[in-house]
Each structure stands twice: as structure tokens, then as C-alpha cells.
Length: 269
Ligand code: PGA
Image (tube, rainbow, N blue to C red; front, side, top):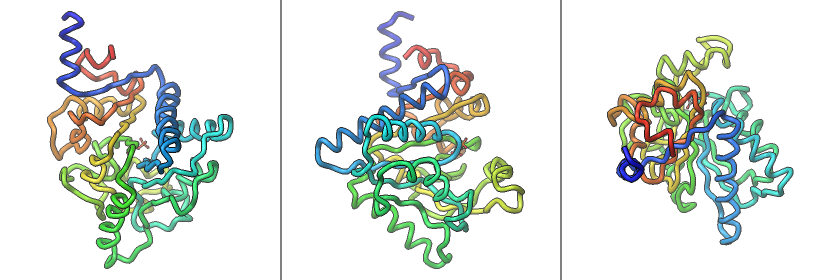
């Protein structure tokens, strides 16, 4: 295949796939992308609206953002954040809550205003959750929509906690967690019975509205689901497939997570 044909194949597929030797290098790249966006918005006198993810995957991205804040003066004063999801029910002080996670891994170490932080509330009574979820999506719209959404992927193919079966037009809502997702959280919670059965998650539609989406995956344990997400049939069985062919999506992988991809054109971008 000559270079021209390869280029047009990539263009048709509209996928940007970056494969790094390790997650450290990939995370530095992603943090730079986020920092540039924040700085650009500062220059325009605007807020930067970020959709943030939790889990092991983005931890080094957040560590690099903290370093940029401490050592290179990156300010988060104009940053507004919306987290993808939260367990339900859970109190914010619980060690495994995503409120706790975000403060520990990012917010406590940068100059973000507390009033700019939005994380789904895991303490609400069931009767008011639906209304709350509608208001969560509405608030994102009031800020002008997400400039950039960071995404990991679960072994089920979930994005946020949109598990298999989630519709492409789903909005923020209360969902049941799949058994695989719950079993992946057993060690963190210290027992199967302690893992919440539900979560509040931004919907697929809420996620896909973001003007830029950066999809992250590292390590061998993600290789199989990454292959399905990028190369499998688009549909509700693997919600991450909904990202395929969207021009605003960039996939950032390490070598191991990319190791089962079959299309050669991904690896030479
Ligand atoms: P992980 O989770 O980053 O801990 O692998 C990702 C996810 O479930 O979305």
C-alpha cells in the first residue's frame, strides 16, 4: 500500500489514533493538550469546560496537570469541570467515592474554584434523581457545553458507566452496574457486598456532544476491549463503539492496549 492510499484510508475512517510506548508518555501528551486548551480559553477571556473521568487510567494525566500547575504556573481559575459519573448510593467522604478520588488526585492540588466542580451526587433520595440528572445535563449546556471530555473504557466497553445496552441517545441517569464492572471494583471496596449496585452516569448523548473527546486506554488488560471499541461493529453491546467515526474523537493508547488492533494504519500515525 503506498502512502497516499494509507492517508486516504485514515481520512475516511476519521479516526485519530496515537500509540505511545507507555502510559507515562501518553499521559504527558494528554495533559499538554488539556493545558493548551485551558490557556487558549484564558486568552479568550473564557472558561474551559472539562468533562473528567475517574479510575486508574487518568491518574497520571492528573499528576502531570498538577506538575504543570506547580512548576509552570498553569492556572485552573477559569476551569469548570463535570465528572462523568459517581457510584450510587455513596457519601462523598467514602474513600471510593469519585468526589474523594477527584479531590485526592487533582482538585486539592490546583487552584480550581470549588463552585466550578460538578460531580454527580451519590446521596440523593431515589425520588429526586431523575430531576437531578436532567439538571446536570442542563447545567453543562448552560456553561456552553463541554470543550473537552476525557474518557477511559471499562472491560465491558462502558464509557462513563454506560454499560452494554445503553442507547446512543441516552442522557444522564441512574444505571445498574454490570457484574464485570462490579467485580473489577471488589478490591477497591474490600468485598463484593460492599460494591454499590448502581451509579449515576452522564449519558452517551451527553458525552458525544463534547467538542473534543480524548479516549484513553493502557495496559494489556484493555487490549481486547480496545480492539472491539475501535474495530468492532457499532452498537449497544459495546457502548464505546459509538465513538467510532466521530471527527472530534482522539484515541490515545499505550502499546499494550493497542496490541490487538488489526488494522495496520492505526500504528503509523
Ligand atoms: P480504569 O477504569 O481506568 O480503572 O481501568 C476505566 C473505566 O471503567 O472506565
